[in-house]
Image 1 (cartoon, rainbow, N blue to C red):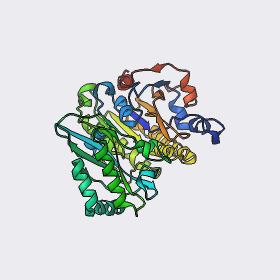
Image 2: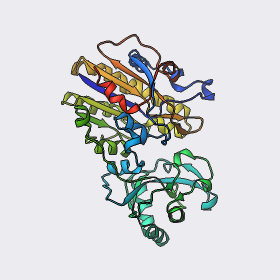
Image 3: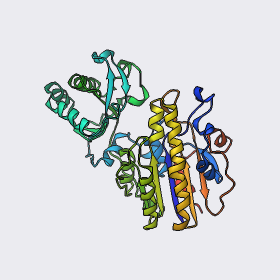
Image 4: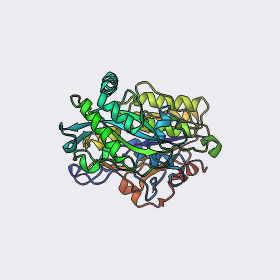
Length: 394
């Protein structure tokens, strides 16, 4: 028996005015989605009540780990995915390169949570400018932060906090797009130092399109029980984002870096599918594919982009998987779900239970619509971390 989990990030949505009050899943013709929905259809609470609605909490649940027991914050997961090992007493932050509008930091608005998709040599130049700026270096020293850089908008910052203080009040930049930043600046632990760090970065980078560092998602290191020990299954994780790589690393799972795979609409869907099929052919029991594109489009308020992401997942991920899996093993089970809602109307996440479907090649069922409305009539699986047990149940 082979198994597939497809996490289509943020595909769940609410009514969209430009779609006549319907969701992208409801209006689009998606035969692959509908084929999978011929199996078991329902909805699941991936984000426990009281925890932040994000891919960190949700994907921990999908991998079988109860966030209420292990979640300390987003950035330790991303740090693990970036090869940064936290030591006792250390706290990490996710640090975005963002785009602010306006030269006055205190009156600026946030235009882009990812610095208008800054990457590669452009990021290298921005990091070099920060290192060369005396004011920024002084602010970094006052905060006591070490910045572990990448060639994308995603960076990791680490501070030493032996006192154990972790009551940081930090805002996810993707949740306040288009808004003045002043009400969303750091509060709680090290609020002054963190704000001055942001201010100094903006001063150093103000002439660039990506012109400010934005720390968020603070947390301490966590440990997870190895996935194979927990479930007795060998798995591989296919993703393009450090958060998912980090969860995989902490769970003891390989997460190969796929050339051409990105977290954007233009990702190489075919390369991800090939990697999954090769892993299953090579002895893995489970392939987990994570596709980030719908979430990114929803954060940008891009209705057509999110719809196109769904079309591409249907045509370029689900269809080829369903065509190729029987040759590897005629008996397979395929779990499709959103990790969380990402609402086009607000451009933010929502922790409402998400639709899922579980397809079994032995009992495929007749195709039916996969959508929020269709799943909404089905029972709710309240404990999202029970999903792997459900997948492996027969």
